[in-house]
Length: 191
Image (cartoon, one colour):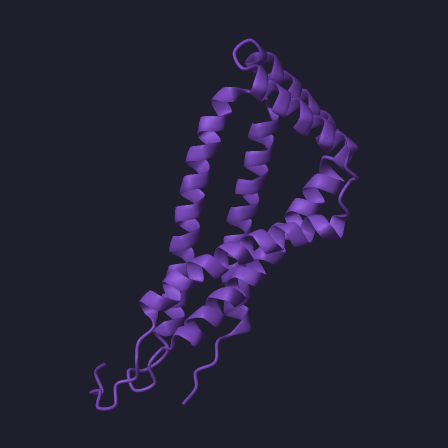
């Protein structure tokens, strides 16, 4: 007997994960654009915490889904991996939509780029006294960003989706491998 997952459950779990990841993304953008080097350490710690939380939630959601399968049915790697990828896809859609709205509608891409250039100028000023090579690299990066075309709303959304799905693909290999279990032919009714 094949147990099917509920799309409502997948969407709800994906939305929770997506909201957490979207909030993290916006926090990281704002902290980085503040231009304060002190925020960089906080961004790193926040990123580590979000990666751990992302893994934990995907593991928990997949484990909950796997509990619906009896010992006789087992829980294959493919079932676990596909479920996890569906949750990741829903989360990615949330993240992509929030990032696109934030970058293009709320902040505005030109305003974002102006803040980015100011932040880079501040970094270059702080670094120029100690490292000419690093300052030159930052100047070149800043010039390339200024000359690049503004991404479309759709490409920004797909970028957010792809980032979350990529993490889902990588985490899924581990999680599905850990949670997969073979069917037991002579399992008792209690299992």
